[in-house]
Image 1 (cartoon, rainbow, N blue to C red):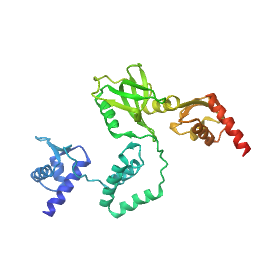
Image 2: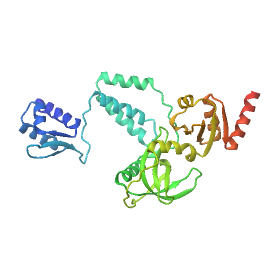
Image 3: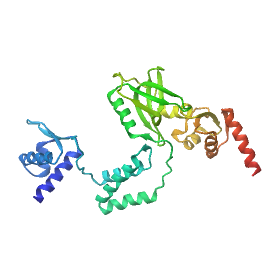
Image 4: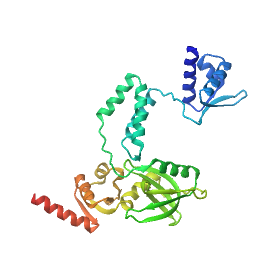
Length: 310
């Protein structure tokens, strides 16, 4: 019985390692007959695993998705990767996922051998998260959007703009983009006949979805398009600032989500408040000139006077 159990675990590990396995190759790997492989496949099915099979000389097996999640077998590197990902997810940009991630991480760590647990514990002890605690997006919203993208179905939703204005939208969703701070949807807005970037935490999907559509090609890749749009249109206070430093130096200083940097040194950026904008520009450590808005120039003059008096 022990030998059979060990063989079942080895068989399950092989099935999880790649999509398709010929029966003869599985038998060779396990050093058994093809009949034994067939019997072991039936045992896995009894345990709740969905294993699809094909007959004939080229027959083989594929591990499918069942109605419930059976146990998984991970190698060392896969286990570490999952644990690191769960650590990151627990920082919280998706509503309610922190507790779920911590529960899953606890279960995983209980099963890890000590050598892997030490690696993961060392990472956790050496890492400090500075993730923002801004608005989070509901996990159900992300899955609804992702399904509409996969199925090429129009997405109908209520949307709250940065100024608090509510509107009903119909869009052809293209991609979800995660910037490390927020989730965004890049989609073709059918009502405005143009590409638009929507903050996912401000989306309230309506059901059912609209009709299917033929995907369009965006003007640039999804991540670049969203990063360019976030600073100039998605912020409450958009701004244009000329940075007086060589472009290579600016490219090193500016994170991808800072905005769109033009060849003449003009940065299209923005912030949730003028004070945040002023603080960000101050951290760059290079001379700059505010082109707009005028309110940012006025705030900088006020701050300069206050600092000089101090």
